[in-house]
Image (cartoon, rainbow, N blue to C red; front, side, top):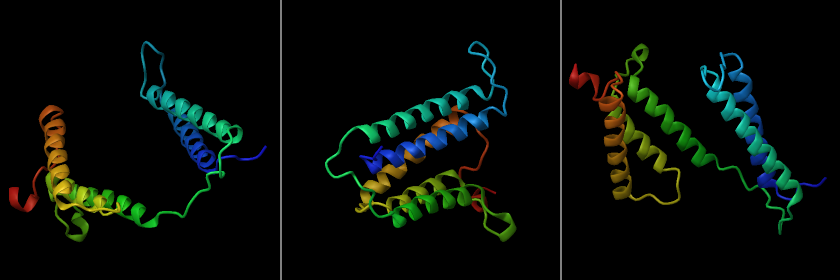
Length: 162
């Protein structure tokens, strides 16, 4: 059987592998029943659904004709680097690295850094849009995590707050 859409085939394969990994990993936890769900119930169901979507997408990529076979293009290293880098910087700024002397900068600074670095991954960069997005995300995160969920992690830089 011939692959008729490379993009769909490999995205389906990715979904299938991740879904199987989640479902397999969930079996190490108590799954429980539908009425009394354990900690492994949600990851198991999510993994099975993801694997099902992947299997369907792979099947569709083998059956449905496409005009040019939808080949996979070049790997986008630059956007990948900015997105992964922004998450690493977020983690470092949120908690700091005391062993090497980097203090905690808190949630607000970490979110602004995350948004500004991740925005570099796109083809266009508009300062005004990025500032508005970062501000909305910072306010929403503060309200959701600090005010509503009452999570205990630094909001402002530790060298300012103390």
